[in-house]
Image (cartoon, rainbow, N blue to C red; front, side, top):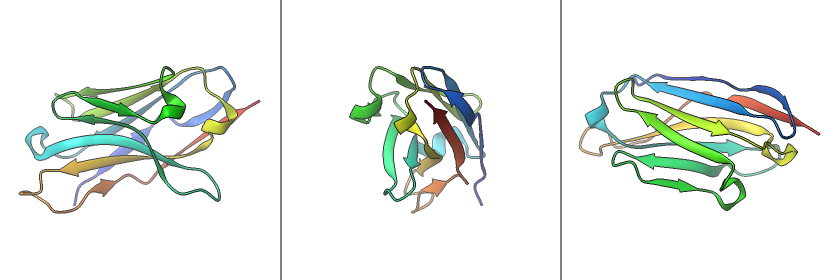
Length: 119
């Protein structure tokens, strides 16, 4: 129903940067929040960063000061600027969209994009 187009993943050396993008085929008024989650092998999926429709952001402690989430309201797109990447950032990153519950009662997830950070 809702399509999330993710891009920007790849292979980067430690200390480098990547910028992830997620474009949602959802009208902006239908979105409460969007965010990024990640899952490393053998680990549970964890929150990386979220941004609400009002612009409030939340970050995992492990990425504070290094990652920045932002939103383009016109394009219904969020970005995750990842700087000073570390090998422990290696994971599959998933885009998440939380719609207005009056419109739809479940979150939407992207297919995931691989981020690999080499030492």
